[in-house]
Length: 112
Length: 114
Image (cartoon, helix red, strand yellow):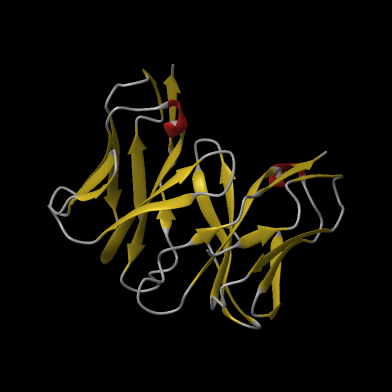
């Protein structure tokens, strides 16, 4: 059975800290891995990763994929209270790529 | 910007009621989805539609049905609501073809069944 596991499930840090969120997967015919940010509304797209070792970066957020070890990390540097959210990891497969398999999500809380 | 609009943000229904959740997207996307989100379980796919009048079961279709009569609108129907269907329901859409795994989500409907 295809599976995506995120860790930790919950994380509380102080503003300015750097955090690393983890996502491991066991999926047949892997195609891509996606990260979403969910505040109190619609999940919004952050990154899509298809190749190992190539870092994707957007401001203070970055992500990388390791297809050999079957995991991805999402890094957030110099965290701000606006980074507080649930971070969702999802994986797509070669067939039926649009039907994503989601992890449980990591709830990140940034305290001032 | 893509906009996916869900008709209600919060909904309270009684056990046994028929419930309609509506979703509209304005980007001419072929694919539309209904997920439910529960703490500790993440998002689980209920139903998926890849074209008008076309649908496919997801991982947890039991107790639900869907309707897609127009391209921009995808409805989720709970024929007889039960308490275990209390959840956050998220609608999403995407293009067909390359990049179709990049979903655009609505803001969700928090449904409580009493």
